[in-house]
Image (cartoon, rainbow, N blue to C red; front, top):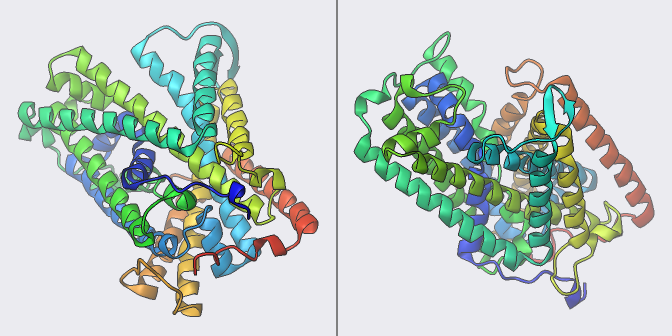
Length: 466
């Protein structure tokens, strides 16, 4: 490639950490914390996140080694190509692109929903109803405006996107520390009862929360996607990836503990937002609850921004390898961003709000399956490369070797199983339809691109750094 076709290495340590941590904390903790405590108890919910976090760390360690060894844009695409081959690489990367696309689309839907918590009754101008959800004009306008702003931020360069990510993540952390400190002084140990609960038993409660945990940690994988823009020693890329997961585990545990410590089991409104309610109670003022909602809105921005970066780089990597139309492999001559991929994501996320909130949930569920399939491919690639290329330079070498890789494969298979029909969290028929349509559309483009470009454009994948 010519110099004008290359990314610029500008992401420093704090940028990378904000990118991954901000992606993982999103908006879900604001909505779901009360449900998790009611389902498993205060300690049970924390245990579910610790156990789930350990599972994600196992998968993340395979990512860490591969990201440090092959710091190229595309992450999963690079590892699966070198470990498993051409078609496997496409399936892996196209699957995770679905995940990124759907999360970005969901954030476009989540933003106007959060605004309703700050400005009740602002949603007016009924347009139509989709799956029982009334789509209003003002609600759609907020979503579309947010989507266009996020697209513009990512279009003009990763420096701008990284600055936004750092500032907004700092806001979330500041409010979170404020809440946890206030909870320690205003809460009561008796509120933690029951420590563990569930129906029909305590194990069922913990498992019910545990099945949701892997989805809350999606986001650490955006670090490998932007590897060519990270200005750090390769070994540090792996270390930061794992550290970001550990920070996310601490965050979720702190929010769960603080909420239970302040409100107690009986004080949680099943239909409300427990963390803002706990914040308001801790500081004896509705202003504090509104501040926490703003922190949740900031979480939408960090997740939205991170998955824009991850999704556009994954699409770019596929196109650069000749697996998608070449237009998506072009970088903007001034901003050095994959502008065609960013515009594609922007168009999809701008259209999504017109179909209402229910459709957004369907998209995220279908996209979640795509993400965990990619995890499985990466873990399998890790094992394959440990066997086939034991002497490959590995700046960050994961302890446990093949054994850890096998554990990661097994855990990934179990997580995939959570989406299958026999699971309590199985996909709905409409979600399976979304997944099937996406994969068939991708396969069609892959067949066309392979006939058009052949295998030669992919020869460089995973080879530039070793």
